[in-house]
Image 1 (tube, rainbow, N blue to C red):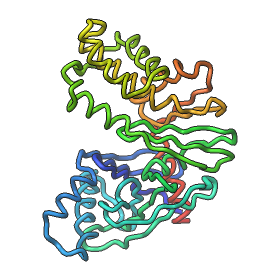
Image 2 (cartoon, rainbow, N blue to C red):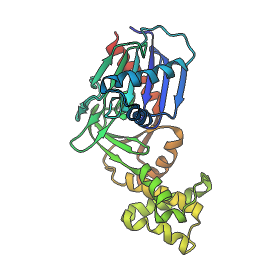
Image 3 (cartoon, rainbow, N blue to C red):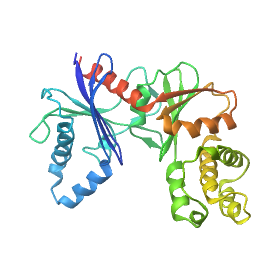
Image 4 (cartoon, rainbow, N blue to C red):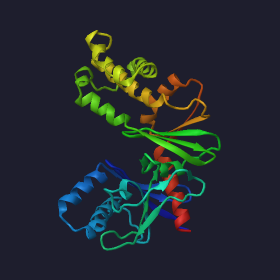
Length: 312
């Protein structure tokens, strides 16, 4: 069994790479970049190179990141990559595995790219999951790294495009995507409401955030969103307070659909992202069992499990 692996999360807008000890998931070295798959794809389109060179183009960029770890590595150390690297804009497109998906068997679709001139390490691409109407790439791998319980649970992955995954008896039964983060950006920066919103991170406005969550639970979003304008017009909230009201409104609207019969809600994200979601859930579902799992730790644990399965 491999003692170490390179673990990579290559998302749409970010790149993260770790050198790991497989047996205890210890991080030995790491590097990050804002150069996600979308930026690399644009560079690829502008390069004018033939399709046959696409893997080499991405592999060369990956090799540069590996070298930025400044650690001497054996060439036979594989890189396990999840996220958007296996998408239509990634290194090489892989099909999605279908829901329902048995998390205990770890049978995500993968593909190995043999080491070559551009990248000295074998690459193991990990694909995503799909329903008849939805897709995800990256969160399914984090889910493998969570200690999934046998009770009926919902796993929430907050972000630009939040994901809610229903898990029953260790089987992912269904999931939905919510464009909460993207809609917040559009409304606060590019809509008529932007004149009534000022970006800030002041924690003293948590009561305003909660008011937005309650408004979402009781009103239609298309109507409630306009209250951002009237809040300022009628001097109910300042533009700084409206920023948190809008956040509560959108997060509350995302979370209001959660089935109250589910026994456990698991947040898989950073501490920074978990805060507002946990507050919103306490408003909407008081007393519900809430668990927080660090997304990076879940991803690292999953990549080590995948390494053990593919490199025994």
